[in-house]
Image (cartoon, rainbow, N blue to C red; front, side, top):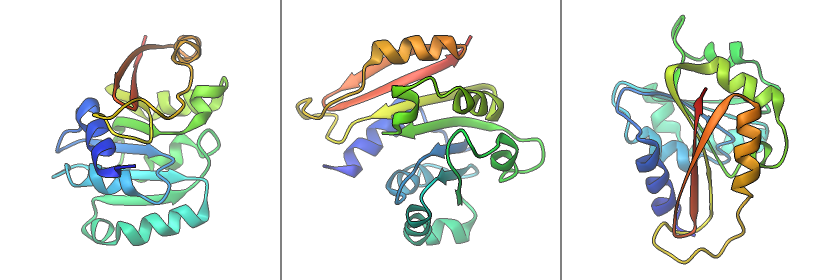
Length: 179
């Protein structure tokens, strides 16, 4: 698995901009946090993960970016952590320009009502929400199992989001726009 290639492709597809305020749901040990943070100049990225071990590993991996003020990593389960706690990581009144998750099954496999509501509350007007999936390369053969995009389209519609899916090689990215 090439984290570099997949996270760069995801960041390209999501259109990460230098000034974006970004929220990553479930960053694990922080490989994607590092890649997205490298694209930010005035922006910041906050990662929230339910695993205390993952949060600690992400903090170690992103130590320089944390010290610079570009990255924050907090503990919390997606759908259980409050939007207020996440927004509290930003300056007063700011919301996230981009919310994304990589390989977070919660949205793909069930209704996740609280998680969808949290995302809606965290997004700035015109903000972007992306669900990404895959373990391989954007240039390689599609070899890893993928979640059902038709089911995601139904779940996202029920949550008030339109879904547009893009795929390349072994990777899938779903853009979810508020209705």
